[in-house]
Length: 399
Image 1 (cartoon, rainbow, N blue to C red):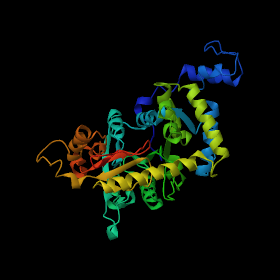
Image 2: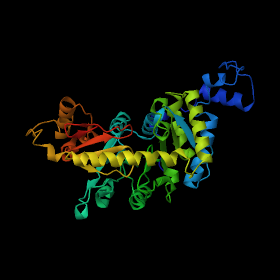
Image 3: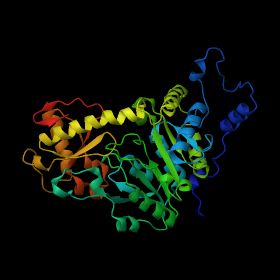
Image 4: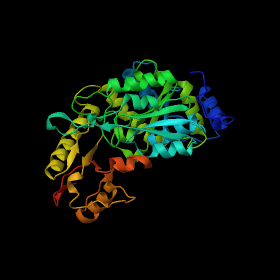
């Protein structure tokens, strides 16, 4: 790991007067008259600025939790940073690490902002798809049947590769990467001195006894991985917009530079609420009353209900191992919505529009989660969301 990890755009902007003096004031217990804080009433502090890189109660409880999850000692002040949702965490990572000419490997299908954020940072996205393999004995396809080709993945790594983006559990597919798949990625990262931006926002939403394995826990990966998490997904409170990064200080110090020169600060009250949620969950960790135990059980029932309903309606559902998304193959509906030869619009996009207009149902075309060159290769699937599912049968289809 001899090459610099930070992008050149960070040169000369790592110092910040506000960060310096707020830290100084906190260290020496002064009365800070530069940023006035209400001193009367226990709740008033929640309406004032807190620490720029994360509300102390939140970063401390996150450090305690991830120490348990990773088997790694963490400093809450240097190994954890709070962001305005996972979206800002991703933006900070790409801005912090990616320069003109750098390549970033993105596994398809991918959450759509990855490509745009890499491009905005001046980098070049390099795509490698998960390839579906038909299950044996006529079983329903699972997200586990979509696999990386090891030789194809290895061919994408070269001296220009700066990072790989890993999303497990994966949106939109619901795939939970196996230990073997993660070891393949980890070995290539170590071999080529590549960073890993690990988007793990659906880490608690895994089904059928599957295990979410954190790639940072594998040999050689802690020092080159940034884990990204989300309170919106963890506590089903997306409106709070609280996310975080966990990783080594050698990486997080550059993410902090981007954060302090853009958003600077996240809402104190929302961070306090998330901190209290994690404090409860840490006490109940692994116990039946834990929200992290109850939520996947509840969502698995909704998943199974949607699978059965889509199958009955003539679609071919792909059973997700995680997340609250489910793909369905719509090939059987081409008689209802005929293909248009030589169309620039992928079939799944036209089908999704037809379904909204004619059935009153909304879904997202899978082609939206692929790069332009690959959209038409995976254009007979649509993505459903079952987190708020109340199944209504309309015209043979399901919402």
